[in-house]
Image (tube, rainbow, N blue to C red; front, top):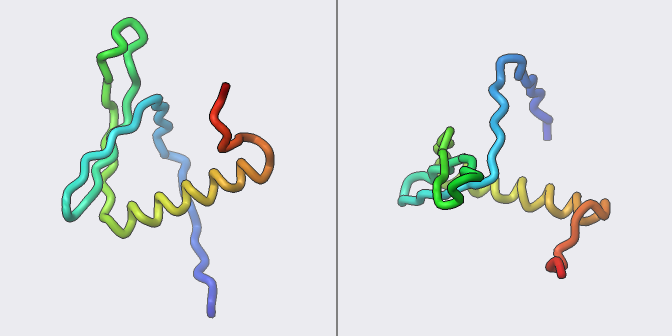
Length: 84
């Protein structure tokens, strides 16, 4: 099986910071909202971006996140044990 060579260009990529992610689901796509919870008003969330993913792309994204969590656990960076 031949490996595909992929070149990533990210010099113009926008960096987003979030402390809240929401998911809106329907039969065709997942809409992932990224936002910041207002410190002064915890009930207020300022959504700054939406990412629209097809269901197959979302499943691949979820698998990639799961794999990365396992890497962090294996390296001792995080634990699955609940904090006391």
